[in-house]
Length: 113
Length: 114
Image: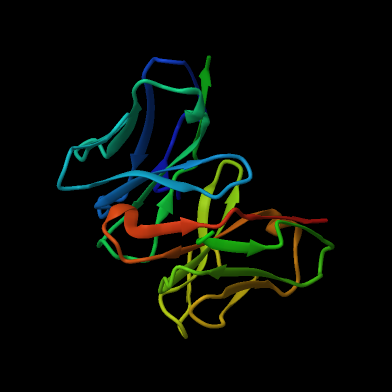
């Protein structure tokens, strides 16, 4: 049972345009969400997070939106750069401090120069 | 460089062989984790250790054992490898900080069981 889903395995975006990566979850207990970025042959690195008490969090070019009623979150990257080409994982947990992080299946983002 | 170090980076095993994946962190983190990444499955938690001397099962613990040797080291052992254990294994550690829950991942071990 996949509790965190990323339905788009891949996405291609022109350099300079907006990249939008989507994530859906089914467990209503999740109250903290994260995005990780992964390059080949490297481990995932933390990108941005959001608590369920917020509906938006920004960090530079990266913005995460949370729609709790739809159990949906999205990551916006503006403007997209070639270095953004990577696999992006959505992750979720509950009771901040809980040891268990549930990951989505990942979306491979390719930025076209 | 500070971080999480995994060894080996690559390994090929025959079915039934055993091996231990090593993980060490130098950030004085209390919690450590082992995940596996498979195509179309994301990262799944195998075992974790919330503190030195404790270990707990994650989502997919069958076929694995772990040892939290000390605060720095957390090893993952496959006693009798099976082809279903072909995967990329990631070790992670965590500090209890606000940003991003403080997870730091190693660069992974790619294991093939033939």
